[in-house]
Length: 165
Image (spheres, rainbow, N blue to C red):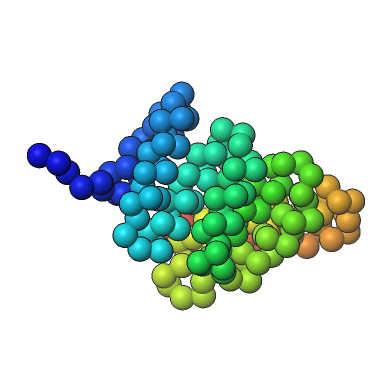
């Protein structure tokens, strides 16, 4: 019996091997199979994001940047792709201005509807934090004050919000 390739299973295996660590090459191979067998552009974007996350966690920032840019070819304003791209630029220790621009684009494209609330709540403080760090790295210390202040107010808001539940 010959089974058709299943992108979801390949992605799931890649995520498992990524999570348990130690077998980076196997995880990447599985993500590449998932990307190759994706049934639509959205699925491909998600698999590219998972692969890039694995590459990032293993210190392959340039590969992470490359895969995130592939995802952005179809989903130019995806805030999650932009967020991880900003982190990857920042992690290279040389692309701080590009990181700043990318983090700002992520904030600009943050969903306003309920569909994106989980992403918005979980990543927004980190985006502002990294904007503050990047401003410090390019020695624009006065510009880092607002992002750091914003992080503080967002964390207070989120703490109060979760205490209500």
